[in-house]
Length: 355
Image (cartoon, rainbow, N blue to C red):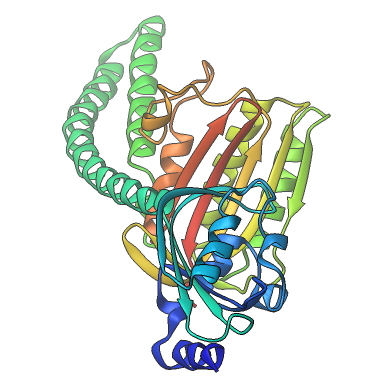
């Protein structure tokens, strides 16, 4: 009866809208009900989880199982802070745990489990700061570009006039160099600003984008590069500028190629997140594209500045590829996150799926 009441509660009060993971367990710790946030946290669908023992969905190393039995046996609520949790897929989380037994006989008693992801809250705060920093940087760069491009135009015009006055072809070589370098600097400034075109949104399939990029990167690599794919076929089309999105993904995958080399491994993985917060805004559906490589990793001192223009760990790079990719993601209402360790660097492109 208690379980049925909670299922009614889920329907009436929309537990799926909560950011907190909510799980209803029976007396044997089998899952009777869970909301979307719990699905995301456990990395499992409701259809797969229903009726399954909770321990089948979590790694055996989790140390808080005894707390579940204790809460049921004592019929007393319990709260624990900063509990480590590891999913069967190996993802490590840190959660605040609240256990609330639901009255009934011992053999029919249920347990309401609430899981609040601390690291997710920290990530949301970090994403909001990153979003604001990118917006501030964009305005600063616009001002700098204006101040730089105006005198460059004057220099170019003067060099052209000077070239017309010079009768010696050997001297014109120098004015050609001036004009060429001015054009190069103007192009560099434009690239630092990123794409300014208005988004031409149309129904876009993320897997068509990733497959196009995969073919381009395989053509660029000299051989020996392995690209593995782990796509979620349930991802629907969503509104996006396919051209700009392709550029962002290409920059990210090309960055992975530069990191791991021609003999490395790149993994492209797509997932859909439900009721997920991106840049301070909560969205019903979010497309997540994970681009991983087995390169040496990003130095710790470089990570906080990785998406700033002209910042690169590659001596041959311009430091603009990741900045442009982040700008395109921001234009789509999304953002790019990065996690890095030696042998495992992952860039995650998050895009709200407003169809």
